[in-house]
Every structure is written in structure tokens, then in C-alpha cells.
Length: 152
Image (cartoon, rainbow, N blue to C red):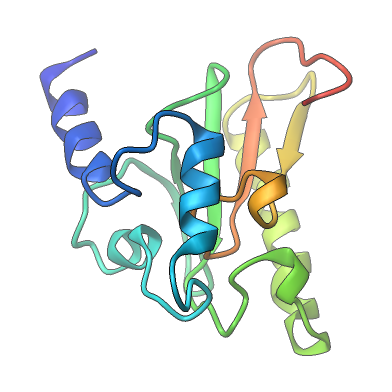
């Protein structure tokens, strides 16, 4: 890992749930924190450029950036810039239909940009049992290797 990447991991890790030894532990800790749905998240800081990230796509509605702990050669997070109560997919309401579709469309655009012509996986973790550790809806775009089934 390059020094620049180590620095970014340190900065980002300091904003995650402290003392979480696994993604599962982080998800359980995040769900237990008060007002998880309304609390600003690490993603808000990334959107506001307060925390560095490797952006691969950005427009007025969404931001896509490389995951700091990739689970495949390509692992990108795609997030809406405005949370609008959409802390997780289970919180989606009819007013969110447009942004939900747009996030999936941008996942396809980014996958093509990344050269994932042979396929990719889209993952949305929701709630503690879905292993959601950041309560700001986000799509994982994962590719660059053969995926297995079942996933988890």
C-alpha cells in the first residue's frame, strides 16, 4: 500500500465506528448509535471534500469513489449527494424512486468506465443484519474477478 493510501485509510478509519473488529461489528455498532438515520456520516464528509477519496464519477446527484477496503479488484461506492432520509434502502419512499433508479444507472455507467464488460455485482447492505455500517444509502459496485454464489 502506498503512503498516500495508508494516510487516506487512517483518516477514513478514524471516522468509522471505533473498536470495530469486523464489518459485522461495525454494522452492529452503527445500528446501536442514537439517531443513526439523521446523523451526518463519513459519506457526508466525503461529499463535502472534508475527507479525501478517489473519485471515479461525480455529477450534481451522485458521487462514486473507490472503497478503502476493496473486496475485489474493482470496488466502488456510489452514493446520493443528498441523503433526504434515505439512510438505507428500507427507508425508501415513493419520492426516492428517481434517485434509486439513477444510482443503478450510474452503477452501469461506472462499470463500463472501469472496463467491467464481463460482469459485476451490485450490493446494497441494509440494517444491522444486512451488515450496513454507514447509514447513508450506498451501492457497492464490485468486479474484476469471478464472483461466487451464494454471496454471504
